Length: 184
Length: 374
Image (tube, rainbow over all chains, first blue to last red; front, side, top):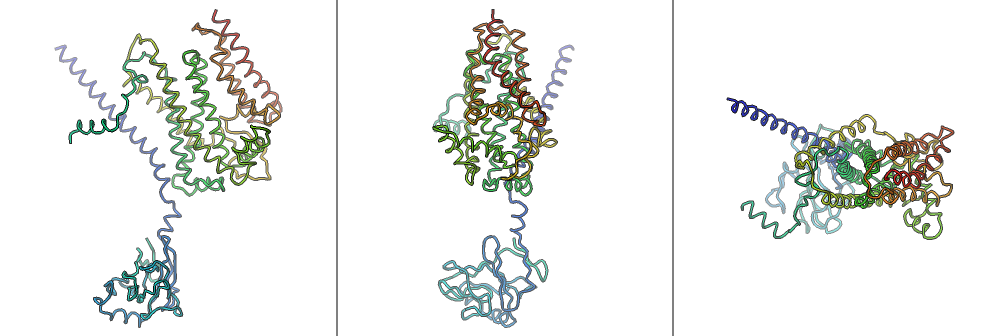
């Protein structure tokens, strides 16, 4: 019987040691993670950087037939308010005839169809496009014109002629309300 | 692919020498003191300082040193914590190094065959003083600015080779590019601290291999790994208390203001860990004298294995122990005497403490060790 009792004690001590070991290692792991976290956190973007990555732009003041330029993610972004005529014209185009086919609905947000938001860089030879102000040269489709290689875009930013073969890129953005859009 | 095949694939292409067993020998003497974990704590703290220093180096701008630290403190995520880690880590590192040096002196661990380990530890201390001062200069505060300007003017004003080295180091008097180069020196010298630690570890291992076989052997793992972790936990606890409750511990509070080229603060005391050395340097009237003072201070420390005249005798006399206690008070007094300029006796006390320091090493140590060895 004495042997049985010793075994029982030994077993108990062994499991207690195992439990303490797990407890110690677990506590140590939590401590190590808590120490490591500030180092990882410190290399992430700060509040200024996060705010710049989620830029909010007021679009209420943009006159019809005019675009403004904002810088977001280091890119010139054009925000243009279409006229009723431009909306009608671009909707009437047969999409399949385009170089880079895209519908009217692909290029604008539902409910805010009068605003076009594109990255204002030519998709051929990369340079900033002309045509934001009504007086600028805009090419035959009343959109944008590349001063570098002569590529032509319509008011939705779809390529309509020239060496370029891709439509203008659309940045990530959403409408907060009628007057504000937020990028990122 | 089985693990064995993987191992031989890697081992055949990346042959590494067999793992050293000298440091963590299978059997070690029972009853090792907690003080023996100090070198491990120092290595861990240096690695921790390297990590927090590298993160700050991402944001630090030498052209606007003070402002960029404010940016780290206010704008960078957890930046205040990383900065407090670095500042308090320096305090903990120096505390451990001072403790290690005094422990070695008290135990006479510097005696042959341990003199190389001792020399490497003095070298570590000397390097850390330089790295610590460079970090202090990088803080670009109201006090450290004058420490940097004073040092740069003194060094560039020296004649001959010393002046050439000084001009090379500081790039002329404290100017546009000075802090930028000090940032690089701070980082590069911090890496040489790692090299010195590695060399010291190798020498200590070699020493452990020479030691006679233990009489009451215990296995290194888990007994001494557990001891190391226990020591590390207490060390980390003290560190955490300082980080969160006394982040400016031992630092001159006036240095939290921005530097001003036309305003010299009333109290120009350096961080506590530099103050004993700063006190000895300040005793001498000239820049050359100050450099001589610091070099002499470190040189007598390095010469300790040869200043100890006890030979092979291992007797530890009471008088020598008393002198070590006095030396400890003397070094604390040196640091204190430059931190409180309002005390009118501070200047003469610094002189007395400096004289006692050199008297202890150059006269008392040879005398008392030779007497007590008989």
